[in-house]
Image 1 (cartoon, rainbow, N blue to C red):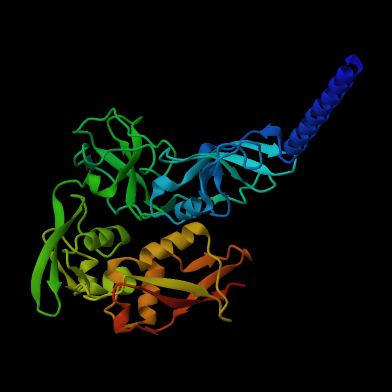
Image 2: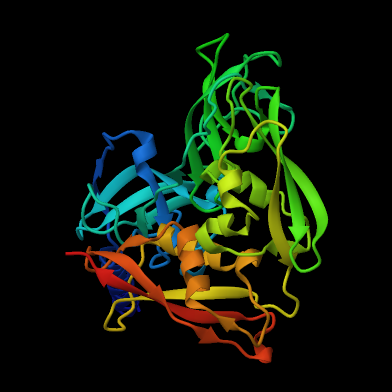
Length: 410
């Protein structure tokens, strides 16, 4: 009886030991299937140089993606949508780096609006953004106005001064410390890469320590000089709206065809109308371009418009190809700018009409892509021509694809 009981106990304990060992081995095998962090690295560059954009190739995780317990915060699809976003707030800032025992590098990133924060695969190097993120350029340089002094803030409750153009840097913040009566000097100009919004860099004349960026309509030009803009329906000859271009009281005239003045005039086109011609950035719509270039205080300049197309296309998708017909691989920011320009109402055509090569060129010019860098070959190409593309009545409300031919620069 005792001998039998001992044998039973021995057999039972042996079984438990085997099971325990098996479980431990399985646990170790499972643990070995995950990567682990070997060492952190540290950024030595300015925060502004660490702005990135998702590529959509990798998801965003709570931990480096191959580490045990990592959960998905944003899927590859979501990251792809953020890559193609038209909002500056969807750019990201990288701020931490780790490497794993498998040689992979992960970056911790946060979206400019703070909505997404986590780890994304960044390739194999701690000095180069790759894999799930790419370097981002959040603004583009622009031309400062011809008059740079004597500006005031029109209404700080609507448009105020920022440390950077709004949402183009992580934690861009409002600046205080100036008075409503202070005057400002314009020292720089940039447009937001995704939205195209124009911002001026200003410095407070009374409080030089106050300097920052403000949306261009938030500045009130020095009082005294202005030119009236009359929007005329070229078909009927009737005035359908007005606006004005202000300029410095000490200037004898202003050039209404400059980039910034023209941008202001285009933004004032009455609802339901578009520029009569998009050529030369829209300046071809001036009834007398030469007169508009030397407009004096009190002058009226005519800007021709036409009713916006009905049953029009929704967007024009421009595909860039080389002279052999091979598609170019655009950088994310360039592709975003091109898609944004192609979606503007001013470039749409009535379904059934032809999208001309000139129309394509106007979209290219609006996106500032006369020259582009191929992301795959790292070669530079220059615009040559746009192809005429016929549309059908079925294209109303749809996106139409056209081609733009580029040549390789030697």
